Structures are given as C-alpha cells and as structure tokens.
Amino acid sequence: MFRRNFLGFATAGLLALGLTGPLTGSAAAQDNFIIVQSTTSTQNSGLFDHILPIFQDKTGIDVRVVAVGTGQAIKNAANGDGDVLFVHAKPAEEKFVASGDGVSRADVMYNDFVIVGPPSDPAGVAGMSDVAAAMAKIAETESAFASRGDDSGTHKAEQRLWTDAGVDVAVASGGWYRETGSGMGATLNTGTGMSAYIMTDRATWISFGNKGDYQIAVEGDAKMFNQYGIILVNPEKHPNVKVEQGQQFIDWVLSKEGQAAIADYKIDGQQLFFPNAS
Image 1 (tube, rainbow, N blue to C red):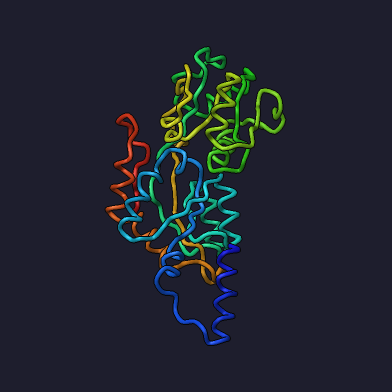
Image 2 (cartoon, helix red, strand yellow):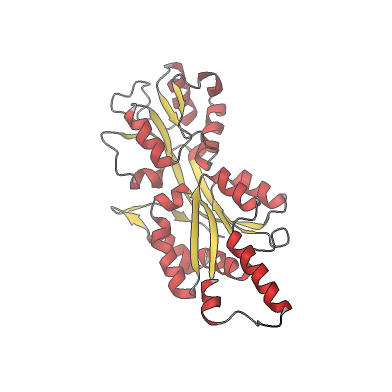
C-alpha cells in the first residue's frame, strides 16, 4: 500500500514538472503484479504453488498472496489492501459485496471439512457422519477440542456447527475447549500434541505432514461442505485496485484452463479441491 501511494505521489510530482509520460519498460514491468488476499488453506495446501506459475507464465502478471484467516483477509480487502479476495466463508463474502467493498462474487471450487482425532477416540465419535451428533458427544464427554479461534473460514464453520449441536463453547473456553488463535497448520500441531479433536479442511489435512497416528474421525455430512469464492475489490471505493490485472486473474481462475489446473492438483493421488465455477 505504501509503495503504491509513494509511486502515485512521485508520478504526480514529475507530471507537474513535465518530466514524465506513461510507465514503460522496467517501471511498467515492476508494477505488473496483483495482491490476492486469501486464506491459509489455499496457500498451505500447495494449491497456489501449483496454479499461480501457470497463470503467471500465460499473462506475465505476478500474483502476491497474503495468506491469513478468512476474517482477516476480508478486513484487509475492505481496507483496500489488495486487488482480489479469494476465501471460503460465503455469507461473509456476500456481505463484503453488499457493503460495496467488492464488485461481485463467483464460486470457484469446493472441498469439505473433517474432524480428526486421536486413536483413543475418547468421545467415541470415530466413523460418525452426523457432525452435530458427534460434536454433542465431544462436548458431553468434555473431550479436548482444539479450535483455531481466529475468525477464519474454518472457525466460522466450526462455530456454526457447534450451534447446530446445541453447544455453547464459550462457557467451555479454557477447559476442554481450547482456542489457539492460530492458522490451521499450527492448530493441527497444537491439537495433536494435546490429543485433542480438531476440525480442519480436508485439503490441509491431506497436505499436513505431522499426522502421527491421527485419523479422520468424522466426515461425510453435507453440513461440512466448504465452498470457496473469488471477488474483485471494488475500485470505486478503493481507487488503487488494479482492475485489469485483477480481473484477468479472476477470469483465468474461472476459465476452463484455470478450473482444470485446480482439478489437476493432487497429493498422493488425492484431489484436494473440486472446481465448480458456473
């Protein structure tokens, strides 16, 4: 943000002196990048490492990703600190557009959430597909549960599922319910270290390298569906937005080529994301 404002002030000063024209050559090349505010699952899963080189080779546009929790990514984009928002909390994304911070939202891809747990399975939930019933059992047995607690897309989904289960985790905070305030990878490391259950997106779990003897305990409920969306930050509200390059990235992600690149990303033969752009 500072760099863009600095360039703007410098260019304005040169124009006043009649000493500059359009950006050309190396100056234009240095400015040919966009900032994508995104979530940790797209970055930590390795998806961006797979798809961004394809886009960059095709367009010459450098994509710089800020990978934080979805809630923070939305706040950053609402402050104008980015050109594109690529996250997974549809109600919050729609609110972002409705407030005028985004132009429009499009579905990109999906996967699902799972609850992983220790082999001892203290709550007796292994093999369950009813996530609300499983979470109710975790609460009833006061089995350790590690939550991101960071307003990320995963945390938002987890909070919604606790509500569906009729559990008020606020009263259990600091007891059997522990909030790490960290990203998914750090929460998985913390949770496995304390033999806790953890809710994670499947892509991060597949790519997570420190599973130990942990296994997926709960999966398959339609309530655990995890949709990702993409939005151009509104240039009318944030004039610094690089509309042309940002829209090029969005159009490519939603194109047959971009969708195929997402589908092609696999680890040990397992597909991590499933494209579903309309």
